[in-house]
Image (cartoon, rainbow, N blue to C red; front, side):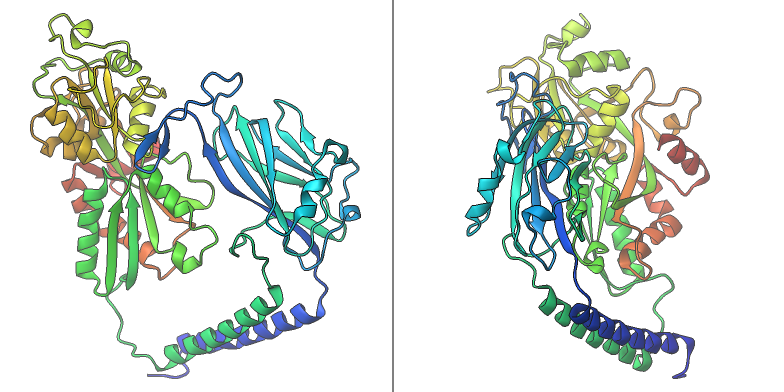
Length: 516
């Protein structure tokens, strides 16, 4: 082994650079004056009202259904804090207006505001009065925040009731601080404890120096026996889509078999839930962020800019009914939209030749990407119009017409449709094919199949791209990046065995790009 190899020289140079950076950090901490800063961050941005999902159950709030102007009601919790090293006084705000800061809630209207403060800061609340400029215009999207004096580490929170826009719309805090700044932050400190910058900086310096020296020692004296080409060791959690989970489990098994030392856990929680879990890693270490991949049926509307999508495969989905319901000609898209709008309560209302059975809609929950693709492509962007009437579509106790329930996984939907006469649901194609006691329904005369979506100019309408989301771009040498490369290079056979079209195949590349 050559001690002066290029790899070892780079490692030692990195160690030296780390020590120098540590020394500069200590000098800066002790010698350079710190600026005044006000930081802010959104700690909650949640929808409220009917059909708001809470865990695995459907919570039906109903509080704002009849209130004027409360369409798409949301609650936002905004934390504003002095995260600098100096106190901020009344005269430090540079606004020409009476108030000091302005919170802007893009595309939403303010309906109510409440201010909270941590224990020991009772003096803060006295500033939140109209005489100090605090308030908002009813129906407007800007909140005027007074010139609140804040000692180092102090904060307050503003709970805002909004309407007229979805969660995730841009929220900004505008204003100026003399000799300082107002900025979004990502503080990972406990909620009511101010960060101790000086001690933390020294601790980080020591840890950085020790880590870099250790890395240098390991690289110089380690065994150079190379692992298999492209393989990485470590642990990886793959979450998200229940429909695509069987494919991911098979891909993970193949990777673990080829790459010793890798441990990939597949936890299917639903597409949106998986993407939300990945997005929640904001503020965590890069290694923590790189330890998870979330699969989503179709493009996620809640991914934000911090998550990176990777198109993996084109998935075919199918509408299915209990096999006691005979629909030899299938359904038109117009028929399906009438059924899911609640316009058809009994099957013979759709066709006199059908039995007088109640329509039973077995749906996925709001976190489902399969449901999102169904609404976008089959219902032409509309939501399923029938409200949920029961937890499990028990037609013995639920006398509604039509009946509708929401379940947490594709497997549960298929099992329930297979049990109940008159039931209809939707599923990924391969899982639907394997389930007994149900029939796939042709749509506009086309039967669900991989071949059907390749037809031109009128392909089968119910399909979508399966995306793998990572936090930013996968780091070089990470298990997440290696696993995605493995899927693109070696996973085509596994993907095709589950009736999906790989996006890396020539025909798949065209279809995935056209569908994106």
